[in-house]
Length: 399
Image (cartoon, rainbow, N blue to C red; front, side, top):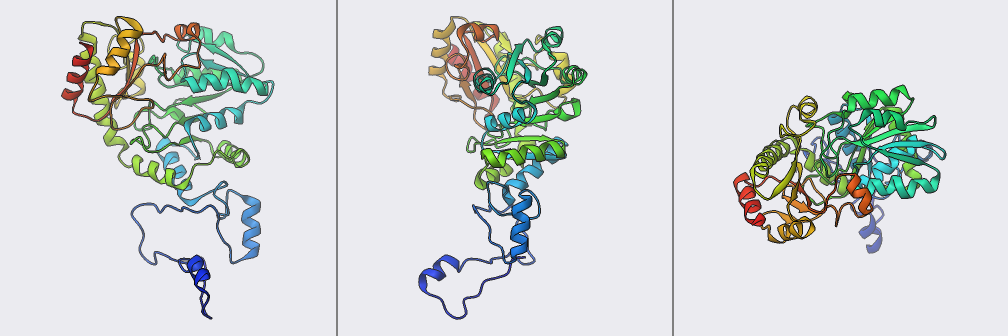
């Protein structure tokens, strides 16, 4: 417990204004909500302790919130517990978490085998930014394991993919892909944003690191931007040590908001999965729809794999292709009223987006087509609204 400062003899007004609130302790009681340690820096009464924490940075105490913060560490412990991991690290965004994970396993001269079905930001990172540092990537059809195997090189150190591809909903066989990676001496890094830990534990299926944009389902209320990486303790310590120097730090308020969201994760996912399945069945039977992509539908090419990986539900993300291409997709987005045209995903409200115009603009037209992103494709993040209202909204908007 920190020592309390005294104000004897009496100090001036400004000095008291600055210091009078220090030393407040909860005594024997404990808060039911994790406190927000909204502090950039921490003071020490023992100078030897000050020096020891400064040298260790990640253990033994808190000195500076770019290095570590109690609220952010509480989130890391919660995520590690949910993922069945030894440790976790928190970041200012999902993309910061993906970057941290990738550069922890790939150096200049190394090669990454990556799914061609990735979020546009991840595609841009691997295809445009990391090559500047000498890290090359080959993009493959992640469901074609022969193509994946053929892409390995002697300098391949990472295999990277999403549990369910954004936005085409291809389900990755994590067990098979991680086995391929191990056989070639590579690490398996999995973006599990579409499948929070209530639905799927990627580490249990051979992944070395699991990554989430906590902005999405973990936060769950569209009011926070955050990212997390979970895995073995040694790997996470290395990631956190590097992160101190490149500074993609998660702020304590955002950590607290994510902790609050995690408390209702299972409840939200149960409702979201049920809504998504109902909406997918409706769209599959609706005229004017060329295709519906949702792992919960028996017609989905990886439906059996999805049932094996996700016995609690198939997630809240789906995509469908409207007849009429870009113009028809734009019309649909203009007509919805319960759903909202918006980027991001994973919140309580249903969101619709046109990937070719918004989420995957980093890809060329040919790259989008190769990834199955047509001009008429619409991605849906299903929320917790009453399913009858969602179905009626989509039915009316489709005309």
